[in-house]
Image 1 (cartoon, rainbow, N blue to C red):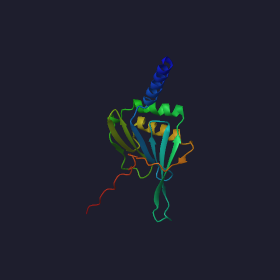
Image 2 (cartoon, rainbow, N blue to C red):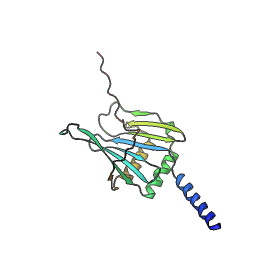
Image 3 (spheres, rainbow, N blue to C red):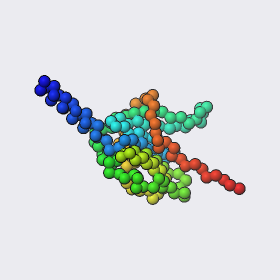
Image 4 (cartoon, rainbow, N blue to C red):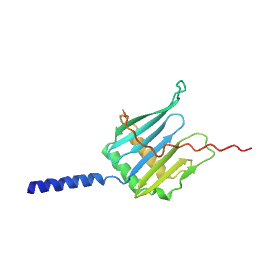
Length: 171
């Protein structure tokens, strides 16, 4: 009986410590440098990361398509990302940082839900917040050299729409 109580207590501690490892409820990022990469990354509450890579092939009937992948973050990178997300106050940022004078470059959009607050921030500017740029670099560099595995699993990317609507021409 005493042994069962100890096992139950240890199991409770293990479950409780695993469930409190995240500083966010949901997080994803979509980024593009227009010519080399257009990807979305979705963090989960575990070490699994989902990645959606967008492609173009104008020889196909439907030239725009995507493939879904997953990978496993190592413990150190997961901890760094989690600590960064824990300290970031996304609600203090504007919803967009746009530079109308840019014609190509790097664009990204972050979606974060934590503490019952949801925020999306679009960045396409030379004067973007350093904290957001650092977070983006950290996440991209953490998965850059990991082995990707194709998946048929469906997952939602809330930051997916990164390109602003074109301005309407009025006569």
